[in-house]
Image (cartoon, rainbow, N blue to C red):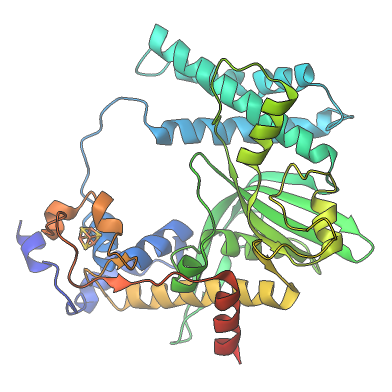
Length: 391
Ligand code: SF4
């Protein structure tokens, strides 16, 4: 308790003493999620990473377990692709068999876990299998009308990994290195050169949000894109996307053409794409598109609602994410532990789902007094603002 009371949260709290900061936060390498966690609330980051309380573990299947299962299975599926000469020109049966092969070791692991080979675990496994088959088939259908192909899966970047870490230079001249795992890198080589896009699998409906990019709480996709581009000289950024891994349709619905199209709409890539009609067509030349939401109108113009950035803007976005990441690393190293959650205009934010409210002693039924308020932002306004700052 002595340690807790010494670090009670307060607005504009004095920084941690240098010796404490030195002991807790001076690593040279950190993950993107850690930087994002600091951006959302420095005090929560301090409790989570510094005090590191260990919540009691309950042996149940949580959504995290499902997420890990899907990630590993899709990694296995992607690794099988080079062994199937005609992929993506395969039928659904072949695609299902590939999922079975890729996921088999994971099913065995699931049934030999602490919950054992029970009816409940078998039902859970069957649900995972159904989701994976629908996702893999949607991915395969989309690939049939795309010139981008999966280049690698679960790409680790960081020290000692095949791909170098993202280096951030701080104001004092020191360097912090960012590590991570990119779920998938897709590649296209056309007349104008090589283009890469990164894809991150999410079981929820995560979307890129202009305000969150601006405030530096959504760094992941853009830093992953920077890491992917470091793999290949002269490669250009084609985009950075989330891909939903879920089955939003009823389990027992027959896989008709309408069901498959509804799935494609629900699971399409969501993120920022290069504003280049040729590259957008290389990503998806179908009508209707299956892998991207509508980015071009019928007359071939760019759809105003799409998140599109030209090459300079794409570089500016990566530069902004890098600058924000460096800023968080600097503040972390300076011992900042303000309980200043980043909220929306209605003061909704991280306090509502924070595990550490009891330590922070915040009354979660009331709006936080010292929140930073994030205003909604249109993507064009974000580009304008970050380009202004760059100038
Ligand atoms: S309850 Fe809110 S202010 Fe307190 S640590 Fe959690 S996010 Fe931060």
